[in-house]
Length: 171
Image (cartoon, rainbow, N blue to C red; front, side, top):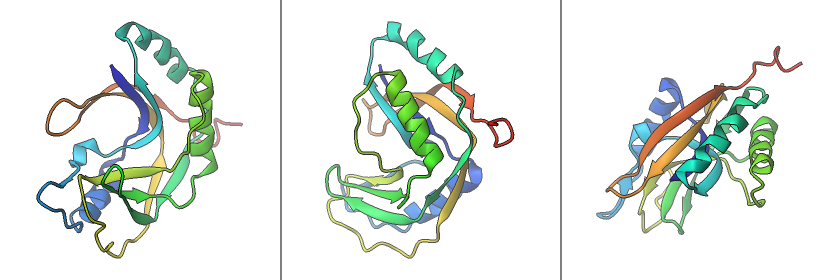
């Protein structure tokens, strides 16, 4: 089972992301990511045995992280893995803390973290990025998601979701 922790956009943010993605020219092999698959990965767990799933849920249940706001303010082409993403130039401290907390709880090695949402895949040439208004995303919960990559498009299944604390609950 391939798992990751992620933020899922509300309807307004998903609509803004879809409108931005619609401006990306994709070649014959490229494809836009389906709106239902938009997410911002907080921590990629990787392949685990189904029996280990029970060790991940208590980590999510024990989260005491505060809500935060992510501003996606740049469109970036990544030649490997041939993707166009909406990225945050700056990771908000709350998101960085959440990612580090989950990484430490799972004893996973430190890796570079660039908050982003993939908009298009298999794009072989960097598109001219359209003008982009910042997309402001107020994160209120984090989800544990299973990724099935066998078909034409990845299928994501939300296994559990946990609320982030509002600022008044964090004190």
